[in-house]
Length: 358
Image 1 (cartoon, helix red, strand yellow):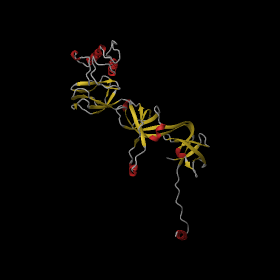
Image 2: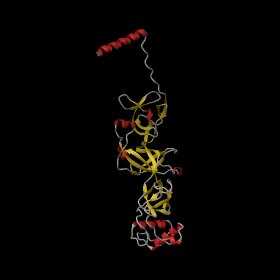
Image 3: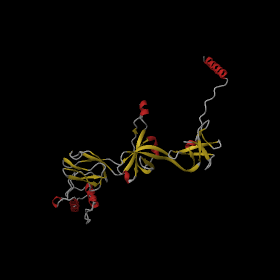
Image 4: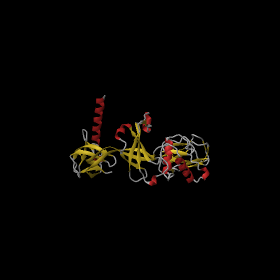
């Protein structure tokens, strides 16, 4: 049957030639416009692009620890509170910020047992300038000098002498590791606040970018590595430093194409990158960014535009010179940013190679 069909095809082709008097012309081959670029020598870096999100480092839940009451003041979201500043108030009693890692868990007053929270308090009182006579010995012991410094602090709030008690009831201060940026208010003015109830969430003021990278690339990234970060709307990239690499892999949600096959994306880990940005971006939060991570680099190699590479019959690559001759090359590191690729072969710096016109 196959032979019969083939014979028919040949006969039909012959008949077509006889009728027209000439064979059908072949379809024209598309011509590609070309230009030339020079072979260069210099450093090359293999950089991979990932998506990321700009935000603020750390998340802190602030819970009310004082007497129950109505919230009468609340710091607005996006505002930064420094040491000694008022975070919120319940029943017109302000709750102020002090720096420290041990949470406030008791009244701080004469007679309390020694503890690290007392040391934190004394460190803050000294930093606030409330011990001008240098009477406080910063340790875990609450002394008369500690109480005197608290009274000076209370005087700075505008309290009358009768209310300068030299003691801080539980719930009148909140300890955090540093400056607090209010992220979200959970108990606005007029809401009821009860002991242990979250009233707001906050972050540090450190700008960071978080990015999900495939776990197979985790070995290419290290704490302290420099990476490039490009924030949408800003001109040019900025340099960031990797400060944390997650240890727990997370399955990515499948994209639209993967959903049809019912498969998740490859497992990823979260990397955290610290960045410094212009003051004009102070309020920018949850903004998409591009992250460029260098996987490998070489200092002094021949390079050509990656678009100059042409496949060779039998495998491998070549480049075409302006006179039409071809030179076999072996590609190496590719820089996605510059579009240049490392090559080895019989090429010299300054020699021209053909590239398609974009």
